[in-house]
Image 1: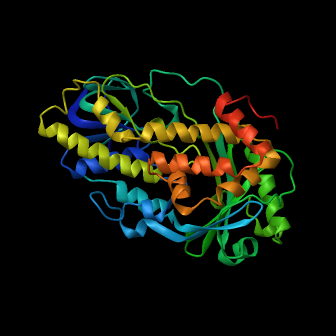
Image 2 (image 1 turned 180 degrees about the horizontal axis):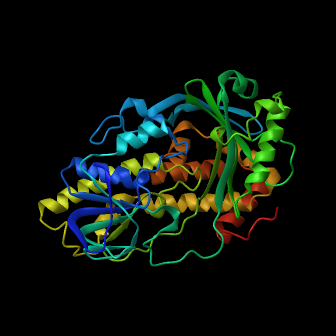
Image 3 (image 1 turned 120 degrees about the vertical axis):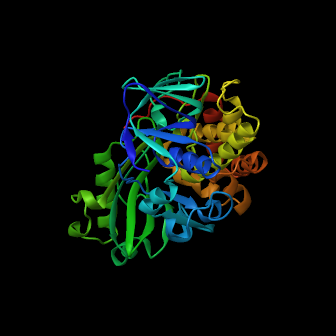
Length: 414
């Protein structure tokens, strides 16, 4: 169903109205529409093509089950490697998604699409910027880190993940990576002192590879020009020529900036947050797609249960049931643990970050998978944190304790 422009007046009622048309919003819209619910997606730019590169662990992608993705959404996959002061082969396959195929797969012709922006919502209704109103049993805020419908406000500067990457052919990339999928390469080959960055090198399919200089988390995020210069210096050090590093070609450059410590959404009655607005972005990796896909299935199942009892459209209990479904049973606890892990990282002296990740990537597969993935396993996540702590040097343990007790800490200096 093609997008229609919003207009002043009232739109026909829906079971679910989704504010925002990114992966999180469309995951929920698709899952609910597949179960027979009436769904509306309101987005300012519903025809916009998604541009970001999305990755996920293969075992976390729903290629079967109630809301499967077609196999074609996986553009490429391989076993990942991490390099800190030592080289670690990761046990799990890592997948890079075909962004266009993902966008097409999540679209559902049964969903009504309205071009517009939701500016307010309450029990049973949503208001668009042009004055249009829609009665909806549940409103989902999928507006991303801006959290359009939150009643709270972020305090202070957010910790951000930033990155600049270039797309090159496989043969050129192999001279940098040795033909491996590099989940993280912390070697400081760029030769620039200060806050550490790593190379993220992943196949995109079709003989293309993304080579991306990444700052995992920093407050504020490293500037794009600095990341571009670090990437250029790193690739030159690996033996590439300037003319093989297409930083001047917009079609072959990716720039990434998003917060990894988005504050908890404080929704009005009748509103549930999805994706980065929830927040469902993993504080340690920045991943969110696999988690959003899982949350969409839980939300859709919960909506069907409510509709069977005739109460999807009444908004009677402030959508608390929907928020519980999205977050999952242990989601809040595990997310808080990972946020503490982020605080630790932000307080580490720059020169000791690679050593910390050396200990982390020495973890057994189970707890490492639990900490990095979309699952909310409290016991395995805690096991990961305790295992790493027990193997740190006394100096690094001190920094970990300071990060755990001291909170997010001040802005980093350049």
